[in-house]
Image (tube, rainbow, N blue to C red; front, side, top):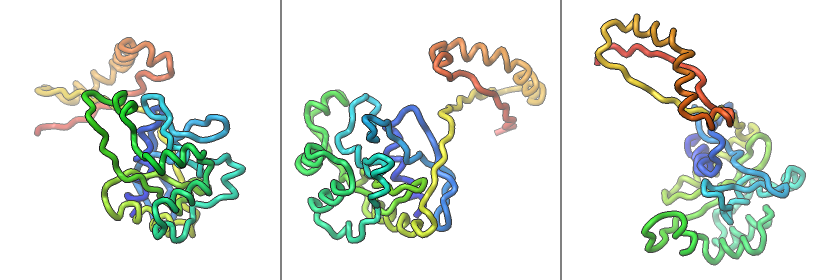
Length: 241
């Protein structure tokens, strides 16, 4: 159940390259060791939006965070939508539009097309001959960091969205879920084989930490300029295998 709930966040995380995170402190009925955060939006004109890696804004993305509303407006809305799954598709879209600030054009896009068209698809990949669509659903009942949110999910697997909604509904009584973001870091590994003395090699590597740091940072000065670069080194003795 918890894994299904957190999948909703993972489906959006790739849209925001500047952050990676994990969910934590899931109250009562849910727990997890990690996933991406629900707060995956940029703010434009006081409205949260989702941005893709290519820089264009997905038309349906304003549904994603805090019901597409400002903090003041969000207090007047709810992600608790009883009977939502029983509505017809068009009625579901109407209900989502009523709880968000989707524009008429965005509603029309979702109603009539709901998929990337030919011109956009040509710019997304090579040798394009068509577009394959997947169902776009909305997970209801979620409270994240004390705020009601509607989370768009794209999946072809049955029962996943239902599991998210049911798990989120169970968690509402304990305040929903909370999020925690890790720093955007990556780990690189180098494996050394046929090392005669593992302990000696361990000590030598650690003694050269400053030199290794300089070599790493010299590889990408722009990364260092933007606040990144070498952070630390860890040596693990694996032994024979």
